[in-house]
Length: 217
Picture 1 (cartoon, rainbow, N blue to C red):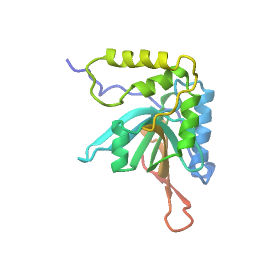
Picture 2 (cartoon, rainbow, N blue to C red; picture 1 turned 45 degrees about the vertical axis):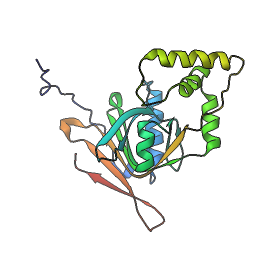
Picture 3 (spheres, rainbow, N blue to C red; picture 1 turned 90 degrees about the vertical axis):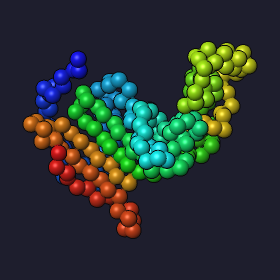
Picture 4 (tube, helix red, strand yellow; picture 1 turned 60 degrees about the vertical axis):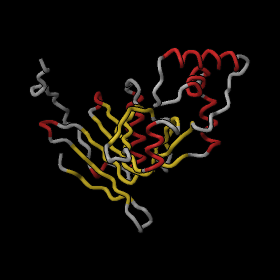
């Protein structure tokens, strides 16, 4: 028997999101919202859905963690040979979604993805716990394996090999990406489903300024 979801509802607050109150640049508003999510002690507030596109046109999505933020965009790390890495190599256009239900907020980001420098990737890789470094080296991410024991054997061999080292060399096929946004939408839940939606769109050819508009919920 399927679960009946049609009567499942959550009433949202009346707190508003107004054009007059937001900064000119969306990264500044995102940083403010992220700080508030951190202060609220939400579980993994940097978790985000990353959507890419397969060569056959089908969308492909998974949850990853935001590990860096600057004026240029949103930074995350992965195996370049993973499914998402292969899809980004063919089509670097991607989207992100952040959802903070406890704060009744959502952020949608669309943009172009590029690899960050090898030096930045190396620095981050070696800042991770040793177990995470070993796991990244051991896993041929997204490929079919006969069983978990294959990974466990690789991990054991790497633990022995690097027993006296806390920092492993970064694999060439592992590193960071930055999504440089062209469009960012901020959503705030409101009463009676009349939610607030403000969208920033980067203007082409005018110093790449941001245009801000309100969308109907």
